[in-house]
Image (cartoon, rainbow, N blue to C red):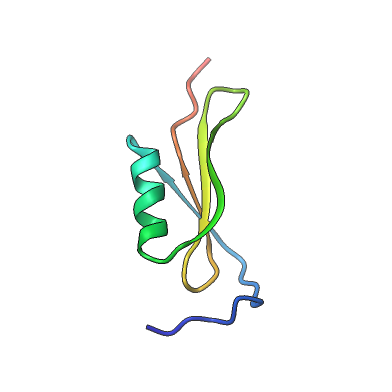
Length: 68
């Protein structure tokens, strides 16, 4: 598997809405993703976490935003 240098910057964000966010975050880290932000509850009620994949792409793992 080819990986870009850690100082490379790529544009892009992938967002995944997950039922089991903590487990998905931990699995991503276990498989080599770089921790950016652990899952945290936002003021608007959404749980959000961030990792970077092996190519530097930012991945958001989150819950759906509840309708008002």
